Image (cartoon, rainbow, N blue to C red; front, side, top):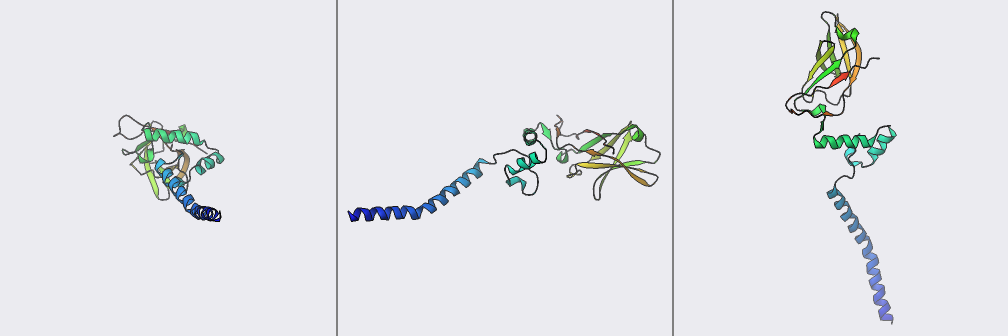
Length: 187
């Protein structure tokens, strides 16, 4: 009888010692299986390390007052080609900014420019109350709020800002520039 108890004790002790190795192997298998499955969310990547944070982005978006489901739908439409990111459109962007009546007719010699950030400016032309600015691919960078500046008699005056949308409807002709119509937000 003591021999059976001794064999049982050895088997149980061996299983007890192998259990941590089995648990580590199971965790490794789970990690590699989850990498092959891909991300579980389609939420827009926001912030430092955003591609790897999973649901933390959605929680942060909700706390910021944004709708993470709307962002997911936006990402799906980008992947499907129904919408495009104007900042990366290969044919560039022609911004059409509707000006208020007081700025629709610029004084003689006046010009307009968009300030995208430090040292980054685009010059525009006014015609029929609309400021037209052509931007080459990548020129807009990551600018979201763009200042519109009027230069007249050597004086620079910010007349308002425009907000570039994250996505625009994809045109049927992929070789022509996007032409979003933006409203000038005055202070």
